[in-house]
Length: 394
Image 1: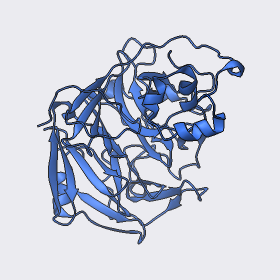
Image 2: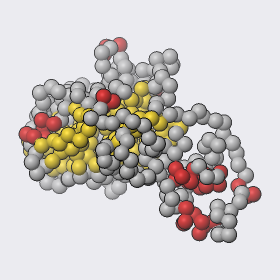
Image 3: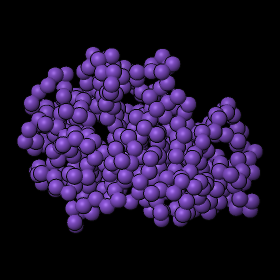
Image 4: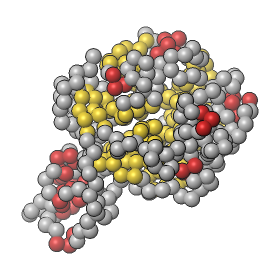
């Protein structure tokens, strides 16, 4: 069981993890008004050293420590020239009182200043972002899926539903912390309720439903090379269309994509796609038995799962084809989505967003407090955004 004593830690502030305590709550600091600073009269970063030399010295220090020292160091860690620390980017559901309460908002959580900031709006598109629906009168008991992925320091929205229950996105919407929003190449078939994943910086989308059900779409898989490709490329078909029932993750793991056709504890089928050989095969039995909730692979090498009914986090052992329990927590019950990066696993569950440090002994849980009234839909880990006008708290 996870220890629930409290300690001081940050989420993705590049700090090492050695504490034996396990649960921390990150509270959201109040936003303050933006202040414009005149930097020409600022003191040197380190008295007696030119700033470019001082920056080399300071870049090796944890930015959470620099943040606490002085304003000039605080400005430095948010400048484009300073190595960026990692932060959380979340798709959130607004409060019911919000005029677009059925849609989504995208926010960034800064683990250094403990603040949430709404992302700038994406480029004009049809339909606009607020037409991407989470809730619909025809589906009162469930949320509609909004499928997103992070690859090569980009957040990509790829599949969602509009008010008339058709695919909302004909092109991927891409957010880069340094460059803002852009649009990717048109999908051969815009879709929803598909399998979405990435392997070695290449995005894959499989199965799903377009504006209407088509066995051709339900059996298809396409890839988009984010670095070298300009279009989606069709690959070897699946054997049937049984993977178009739900929005699922195609988990990139050791040159393969692992996916199941149904979420949770229900009976399911599993397949593995070899990205190099362009072939499909059945998922190993032990691996399939463990897919009882969201799954993510740390740097595409080590696979983790959270049992959504029991709140158990496990690690996959491929040599023995078994899942090994590493953590049990009430906060992980009802897990819906997760990502793994840099030794930490971010889990979206009924309790909100939890960050599990799986490197620490025992594993440590950090609780990220959401903006008041909001609920988490998905979370991703990307470098922080540069702050050009220094709107960071004093």
